Structures are given as structure tokens and as C-alpha cells.
Length: 293
Image (tube, rainbow, N blue to C red; front, side):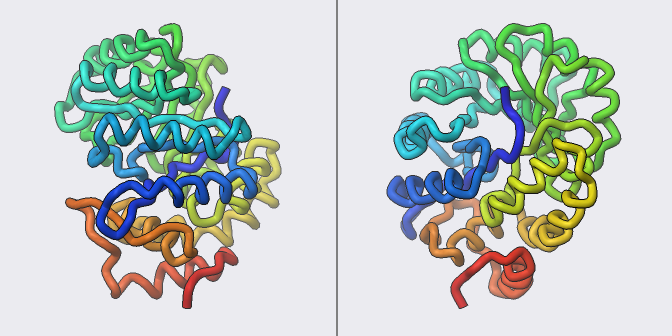
């Protein structure tokens, strides 16, 4: 159901931190024109912990209106409370999204059985669910064996694996047998993930260089390593620079430099420090991205 280049979209905000739905429409159009295959609203890159349920609803509805059926809209609905994750998934469903991206419960450090029961409960909300494993942020690891159990749960359709490298994709393929779409959540190793048999990625870098990332997804999924490597060579600087401070700080600054959004970001995140500006600009230039001088 889900593959190719999916962007983990930044949430555009006015300078005072209020949502900027006009800018959201511009971003959706920008990605449609660039060939992006899917858009995640209110994922980690979208500052999901700082959004209310009402704002999540507004963002998804505005994105769907702007997309007009031309690209899939996925809503982030994860929480470290199972009851809260179910509520947010219902919001995403009622707003009309194609699927929910549900991050593994963070901070609580559940067991593998706890993770299984959490996702099983969320899947009952009646919307396709993409599992999201990002141990560097959550302090828990959704293991391939647990993902294989969850592949039997109706409504669970894909897994986003934000673990650097491709060490586990062979295990996923062995255990899953194609039952779930396999999505990389690590831009720096996304090319290798695709060439090892992945179906796509959910990307931070795609906010800034969507055409290149779409081309990388096509080359990787079609088994064209030389073409993929040539594209990835142009993107490597962005993969690094967009994480020079915790995401989404650098990527929001970069998208602002492109003239697509204002500077708004919500505490506890703060704007990108001046000392990092040149490094991000150099990476943008190498990828052919135009920005304000």
C-alpha cells in the first residue's frame, strides 16, 4: 500500500507559533509537483508532541483539501499512552487520512509483549496502521519478531524502521514474506535499505530535495544501484546537515530559507543556531536547492 518517497512534512507555523495552513497548502503543492509519493502530517518532523488533537484534525483536513486526491496523506497518531494513541488514531481516521503512522511508545520502555498489545489495540481503531520504530528517540526497540506477530493483525500494513543500516532488513524479509511494506526511516542509509529489498522511505531530507529523493526511491526500488548512488551522492550532505541539531530544527530552517514557510517553531525546540547556517546552506547548494542568500 505504501512505498516510494514519503515526506515526513514539517508543520508550518507563523512566527508566533500558530499553525500556518496557507503555507501547508504551498508545501503540499510543492511535493505533488516534485513527485512525492506520500505525505506524513504530524510525525516527529511535524512536531507531533506539541500539537493538540484539534490542530492534528485541522492539519490533516487542510492537507487533504490541498492534495485533492493526488497524493496519499498519512497522519501521525502515536503516544506513550495506548488510550491516547487510540484517540489520536480516531482523529486521523475521521479527518480522512489514508493511514496512521504510530510511533512505538516512548519513555515507558514497554516489553515486546506490551508493544504487541499496544499496536493490536490501536489497529482496532479502523484505519491502516504503519508501525514506527525509532529506538534513538523512544528508548525501546520494536524487534522484527514482534513485527512479524503484528503482521497477522488486521489493519497493520507497513513498518517504518528508523534504525541506521540494513542489518535487519534480511530478517524482516525472512519473517514477513511480503506481508508488510518495509519503509526506511533513516535518510543516511535509505539507499542501501532500498537496494536490499525495501519498499520506500519516510524522509526528512525530502522536505528540502523532494525531486532527488523521489528519483532515489525509484532507482533503489527498481534495482538501479549506479543511478541510486549518483543521486545519493548529491544528497549525502543534506542527510548529515539536517541532523546537525535535533530534527526538525535544521529542516525547518532550511525550508524557511527556501521561502516556503515562516520561522515558527514551538518550544522546547528553538531555531537553528547561527553557527550551523553555512553548513546547511552548503549541503542545500550541493543538492541544487535554491535558497535565500
